[in-house]
Figure 1 (cartoon, rainbow, N blue to C red):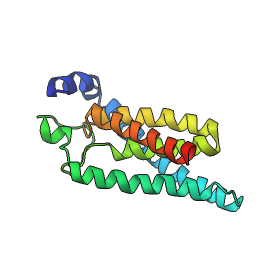
Figure 2 (figure 1 turned 180 degrees about the vertical axis):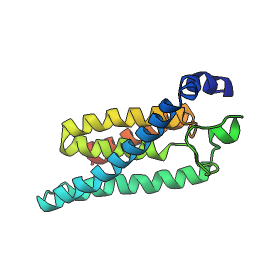
Figure 3 (figure 1 turned 90 degrees about the vertical axis):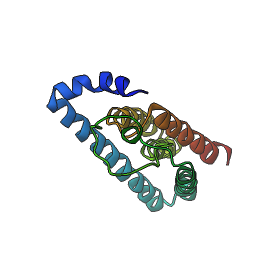
Length: 164
């Protein structure tokens, strides 16, 4: 991605401030939706005394810690640091762009739903794709960051919910 690419991708949003506000709102709502749905899933499994509770808790938790350690070690710059752009999503963070932890978390949580309530998991994966698009359009991640976050989230889900 270049600064010119970003300009082309975000030009329609910048021309219509209501679209920019919509992007910011959708980004917040989708993030909140995923992060509220996960504890509710855990609570439902706990109340039902479902044996899958430990797996649904541990797979995302362990994966999140491992991704966070990797991301800290790699410490790649964000688009607004590397390119001469003004991001639509304001963020003061420096580095820690790769992989996108928002997209990773949404993907692995969606896998937890696929494992327990498949139709909600499928909806979660669609939300994850939308979140990935929002993070790139927002200028806080490169496409490679969100693609890697998505793939690592799916891989973590596959390992935790299928192989183990």
